[in-house]
Length: 498
Image 1 (cartoon, helix red, strand yellow):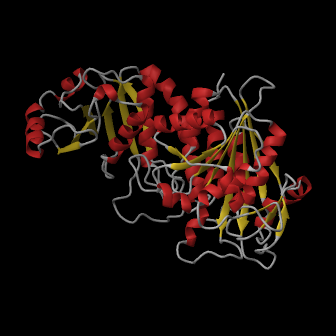
Image 2 (cartoon, one colour):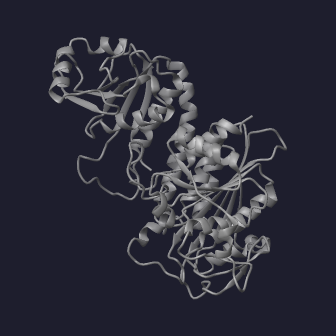
């Protein structure tokens, strides 16, 4: 991971350095301190507004090079629209927009968090800082030289704030979440020849133990003893052993049931014997986006010392078409004792999750379970890359997830479950089959998973459209998005911390 931006914070009265970024609203007014900073450049700004017919529409910007009356080499004005209606996700977006307006050649910049008639408090300022971090992330670990001058060098950004001490405290929490997101992005972006199941487990253990997370790693032998034959069947065609990593953060009262998060971690998915087409197969290095999210989330919760007991479980496998690989028509016995007929070896993620869900339910008796998986292409057909698909057996949990999605901008859309879909995954030869066919593909995948949760409140998030190769946004220019870390952190913060 490359994070070339250094952030610092100072009072609003501090003299700015480098590129100067200021805020306005739909009336084109400036805050009191901003007016003082811009004194002497009023005429240049007015001429620029008139020349561009600048109306102050939300997130629109205007850029002035070496404006007369200012020492700054560049002045950027960003409108936030209706300043009184800004939400937390808007301040995150503001940070991303601001970072995007700093040219790659710049080495210093100052963002003045000052608006007319609206105070930007510490938590909002921390969100702006987080937005800058997320926007400027790049994964360049394997580049040996820069292409040209468009790639950014070291950059120091100072945020001028109304409450310097309060902002620094709030940033400590925001940085923990940001670190979790960026760690998840790193994992998704890594090539599969580097990040195989044992290496993923090693990195999770190394990274999370540094913030006090208890780690247990189950290897092939331990998984076989436990009876996770559905998961092991997926990985049996690979020369790389499978792993299940159990991550525990004990920040709540002793003995209180944890909240549980489960991630699909297929570090590379060829489809197995039911092999995928060659075109685009390189993207299947990202088929562990759910596991990356859970790992990043547990890091974030521990790093900010969340007052909750949380457990994260990730099933790590590589799905390869070796001579030892499982075949269509095979029948495996899952950890639950239920048998599964393999119809298509490319419907492998649900096999991994079935064993890990059952293990989480039986071992930890959690308050709820949420699994995340890049599970089906069908969810892309249904929702594109704007929402993750939400399937759940619990209305209250679904409503809380939807609320957290709106707050963070990582939105979910609830999809149906129902007994009518069960017949599509019933098998003539086993208790169920691992695919219900083309129709309602995301629903039947979730219906399959529901058979491994019993009465435990549960939600399944199909993140195939949001975790990898998602459209660039104001806060993400990376192939791997780290989607879900902020969503689930917000859910825990709002509803489950003591």
